[in-house]
Length: 180
Length: 454
Image (cartoon, rainbow over all chains, first blue to last red; front, side, top):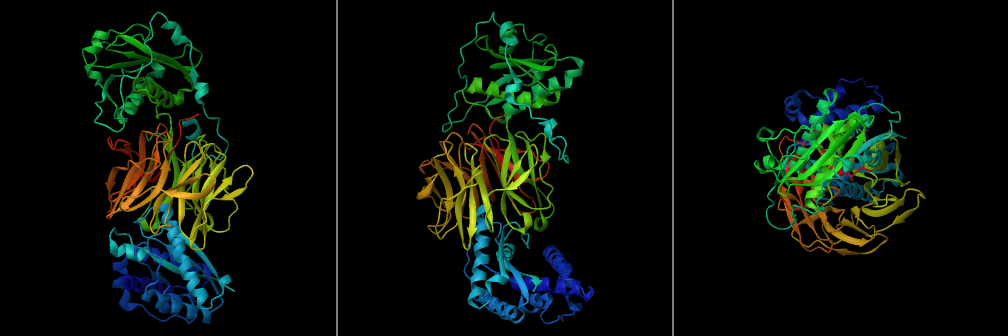
């Protein structure tokens, strides 16, 4: 489920990008990414319908490349900050990419699902972000490139009220920032 | 108040808020009623917060008298008093259609037999008057079964403040009839939510405790969470995603001026005032752990109160300021702990099944309210500060974030039913009875109940 979701978002985004001029400014891209993510959460059906015609090519080293070919997020179990084998595999790919394209600074966003209390979920999201940060540090990524922030349960991407959505919202997302 | 908060977008300093002291004026009423032997103040209703059902006391509140220009506010005052008393669950206003006597002069002794005939236990009469050179309100509370006068008071204020005067009268009636302080002259700050769930706009809002006079304190360009009143009810501390990261902010409600609390690198959240208003206690995130800090608002000095490899958050002072309850997962899951206000050793007090969160100390000191999570449900409950006497007041898909009324008898919280409905505010008595929805214009969460207004 989570993998499907992630792919759907990526496709939605690449579609967005294909309509954008190639010499886009990064800020514009970030906005498009956010918009794409926001839209995808409530328009999965629509995105899936349009998948067939989506061109998959992304410029290597672009933010689009990261999201489409690497994946920008990992997921967690309920009230947990443990990295699953799937999450580790994704983080390994992310770390490799981030080392190869080391011009990017980035933010690790930690998120929680809605089945917790507000204050605790901020701390839980922060702890998830920190787990990812420490994983990257162990993989040799410079600490100065990374920031962490927690949104607690404030920014769900999936909005139903059952486990299929909650599992997508318990996540850490890598948001690429300005290139240095 | 209306005159302060009626202008939403104004950033200018509004006129000074009316204070309770400015409102309170005694004199005239006492003289009028000097011929009456005043009944000694005693509680007619015996409130036992733990036992049995309370039979609501039938009370008659005829429309207050007033000149043609004040007819609307006069009638409004009686309605607000009746609504306050009814919502408390302790009173049941009698249908005005049943009234036999028509009150024409509040200084005349009512015909008690007429009020006994409709089973009224108490009678509230009053009037709006311009006799004192401005807008004034007089009221009398009568003991119908004993044919006696309980209290008479006069208030002077601005005509647009009639709702507030009504709440103060309701507090007087509540106090005289129950022996406990009232809570109606108070406000609630909360987070107004709008838009779809994955793009929620969250604004700080404030209203009277009955839901009237809603005003918005922020515009929604940054998300806001967990507002908490200062003991003066003039400031709010809250968490804001200003610059895309959670930070504890303090806002002066009148001027709307804001400032960050403390100078912490990174994330701060879960703030609450100390009972003297001098400090704000809150969480600061350090790596994977959250620690509790107290910030002195004047000296700006900072004291670290917890330091564990855990999530320590949601701190709340005891009303005497000597202790702090908070939640921590240091033992593995979220549980409630109590420590000295200066930090140090903490005592775990929650031992039931499940996780315990968002503890808040009652203004009376006798209870700590909490959110309890277990078996897929979120409940609101109370326990004594030593952890004994746990009681669940309400339970369901999602109930969270209790806040006490100024007298500690009522708890407000927010509820989500699941599905497409968003959060709404509710109240429940600490007996677990009298659950009621609090009207808000839109979705609402994270309520904080002010003390009685100064």
